[in-house]
Image (cartoon, rainbow over all chains, first blue to last red; front, top):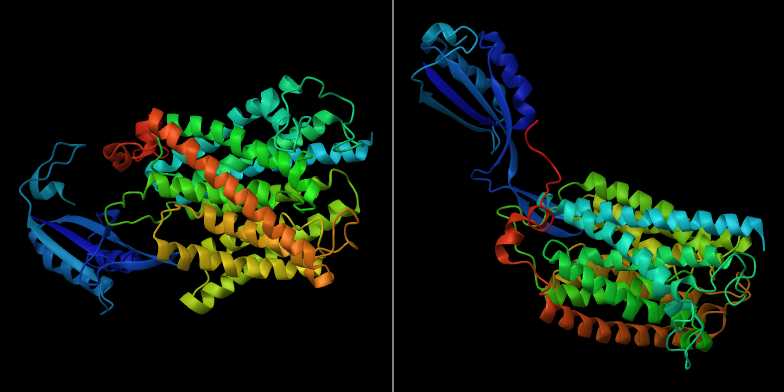
Length: 112
Length: 409
């Protein structure tokens, strides 16, 4: 099992969700986050004074069984890609255990 | 006594009242999240404190019978003694003296509240309370007396219809001095000083524009043509100034900002304040346009050059806008509009412009000297600034033990 964390552009979230649904990955956790990569943030102007702020990003978290890892990565990449700086990153971590709170099921059966 | 005049002035008192909550939200939106309530609280505290100060002794100091030489009113009207249902002919023969008093009370409330924007996000609340009470008593009350209470400046022929100097310049320059004395804010991690909620700033700006009709048109102290003229010039100057600021930004920065158009409108409101009952609607277009130009320079170039941290630009908008409006009155005033006024420079009278200039210098000098003394006294007794850790955590939690926004449901 793998735990996939992706940081993407907020306006690409709908595209990423569509692509994930196409490969039957329906479970997803999304949060608003702030961050910066190599492009070093975004300039806002208040009364003529520039403020360099962190960029608004969207964080996606998905737990998947091994068979779904590569399809999920391709789906996220396809949905989030614009080719410009700031498209984001995907991090893949090993996942030791999953517990479904409602039934107490564990492991691969509990993930979907 | 005239019931129309009385109804209008009391309605205007309520309109001016709403400006202080308006200022609170205008500044609150510009603050960082952790200081939102402290800004609202400071404005609300002033509403309570100055209401009492005014009926107990502030009104008497500002508008009471002169103690001599036009310097200050006496305490003869302490606790509103003798201020009753009957008109006081010295101020208005058509409305109850009490109505005039409460209309003026709203001005004494908003003036210190305007200064909150300069020292926001780092002032200790207890010290703030004491400083505001002293400032209103020793700076606002005397200047109001000089200009409106039969003091020495009104005898000189200086014109200030609704408080360009008394309210805006006096608070603007005093606030600048306080901002310099208290020092700069500590920047947020990664975020600088970006406003936390500009929607509230726009709401506050809207309330200010709305309330300002009472501020300016109410200063006619009657429901007639002069009030209508003040209403129209106020709206026209404000609209022009909002547009002008947006156009300046569009040209210089590539995009007009929401904060910019609201700030511009506010600059227009400030600048037309001393002039609104003496100038024509067409003149008010020029006053509004130039207000945005000079205030834009003040909040961008001047502030950056000198490096002071006037957090929400009290000086840049109220101080500078008020100075321009006071001088503009000396340029654009017409006796055709107001028989009790004078002609300005553009209408053949050079003298008024210099009187207005003298009036500015006198009030600025007085406000700066007394503010400096009061600040030093309170700083020595209580300490004006919160400690570094409290400032980093935010004034909401450290000064008031609460938060503006919850994170969890």
